[in-house]
Length: 255
Image (cartoon, rainbow, N blue to C red; front, side, top):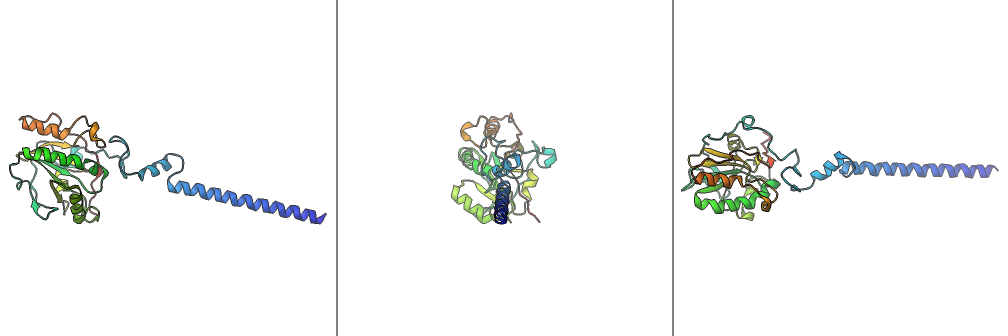
């Protein structure tokens, strides 16, 4: 009788230990899912989505890490140029080693000054459109001049990386490094890409996005920069002079 009781006690202990181990393993797996970002609920879904690259839909979907891709500050809050201001010239190093200024561009009737970079998915989405803009309008006196406003201390945004990107994409336009990060604050560039269209007297005539669809050039309905150029060519003021830039925030030096 005692033997039977002993066997039953040992059996009960074994079942208890087994159930405890299963509970611990289950809790461990749930915790791993939560930390990996695949757990259910808003936080888990958000973390998992952040790791996906370029946006999935329009300008408001799939924002880069750090928040919405849409410019949130007004021109007054940014503190850069307003429409009608005369932009100060600059002299910045191009990827070919030469120094480029607005004054160095021959027969200019205007300037498509664009702040862009190597790594921002929105900048990459617009590279081919910038190439097309330059190839179409540079012969008409409106050259694209791109400036990387991000800190050159960032290895992926530094001068060597810019040279590699320009070679890979065969940029037909100047790609300049804002080494002291002094030019982008003057203009008021806050996102990449961010366009400032100047007329021949360097007066700012348009500020904002290139067009109304960052993801799909086929679905663009309004070409803000092109429309503004056509207005200037016709001797008129652009109908739309200001839009919100869509892209990644400019990355300033930590120093």
